[in-house]
Length: 289
Image 1: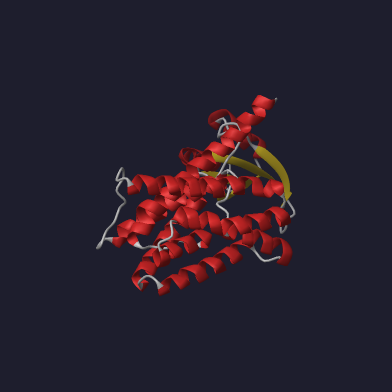
Image 2 (image 1 turned 120 degrees about the vertical axis):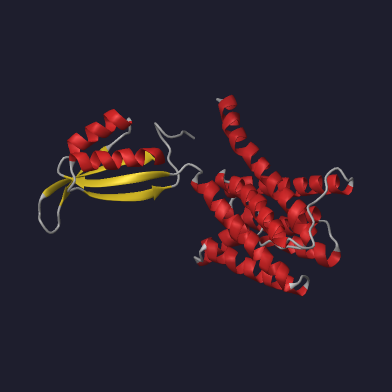
């Protein structure tokens, strides 16, 4: 039992460490060399680096310690456990990349012309790193802690708090970096947010079919036999006509969509079909977690 618990923990811990390593790499390799910005407490650390030359690994950890202590007291140990790991590992990996750069073992990407390339790759690496961390239940501390405290005690949405704080921090960067760098930062932030959503929702996309029909049993049997997909049949009544109907619900992969549409047209061309986007599917025939 103990070995199983450790196996479950490792399947969470290792991705969080990987995510913080990628995120730290993006900051040290793309963001700081090109004087771009980042939101949250990490963004404050970036500003301190630009203004005072403080190492990002030190300032990020120093800023997160008081927030972590407050969060530990107000939010509890369980919620803060993976936050602690994400916060500490971020500082460790920031220091790791700093040392490699200082010793000349890797050369950060710096450009004086094509900042859009720097913004694109910054967005990809930051988004990929944070997406992996968030997907496995971790955070990198900072404004996430403030947002959760505000959500619990004031009922304010977590997303609203993070957005407001990020806007203030990125706005303050205008005192230290040119406005065009801030605009390039917004490109990186947009790309990062999209990649975070993509990773959290799942790289595998599918379609959910809700089929209102008079021939539910026949359609369900064909789907089970020819597509080997699970099907749910639910009774329904037409609100206007009062007629008995059936709702056939199933989820199929993208390459099965055309075949299922043809099947529906063949069995019941008068059926009403709703097709919805599905971003993550768990279960037999798809994937297990």
